[in-house]
Length: 149
Length: 80
Image 1 (cartoon, rainbow over the protein chains, first blue to last red):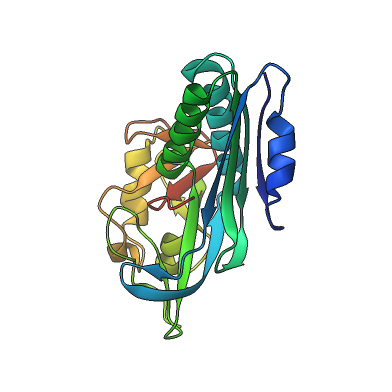
Image 2: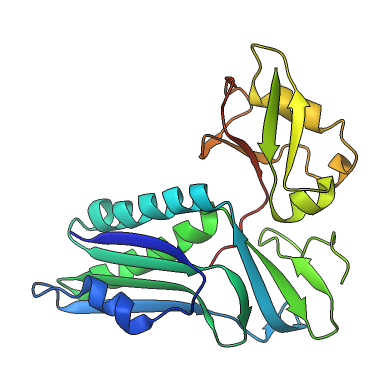
């Protein structure tokens, strides 16, 4: 049972993620990519800067990958990669590959992993807007207005 | 004792740097750390009870602090 998780600064390679979870006994691979989008809450976005408490983020990602592989369905392979640094539109910030014998479990594990990641991994993003301003994003509410451009 | 508290993202901006040192009693808990940080300029921009990690695990306000622990305030996470 494979479960790997990494923080990276270079672009995410989806083919490499898929290769990490491919297995002869697994008939389904689900690949999820979270991608930088041009609009958030009605504001034009030009890019996102991701930062992390790297040591703790790595531990949480390791835990999530292991829990996803072992506890949710019992026999999935999981590869998670999260990017840090400056990203532009259409670039992937997170990639999750899950393989399982059957598609239902592969989809379920993939979905569980992204929700857990968003809930408990100490990673933050600062959106850059078309008007030149930048703000930290608080998913529980509005952007945090502490930073001037 | 003096402990260093790691700060990130909006909290680092609020308190003016990536870490802050605070003095706490010997038998201190996370609540004592938060009370000490609350005295710092910029702390009014933080929520009343920010999330805290001790040794890279989420902690509660009653978690005991020992000398050498790695303490961090965790702003609302926004990965993905």
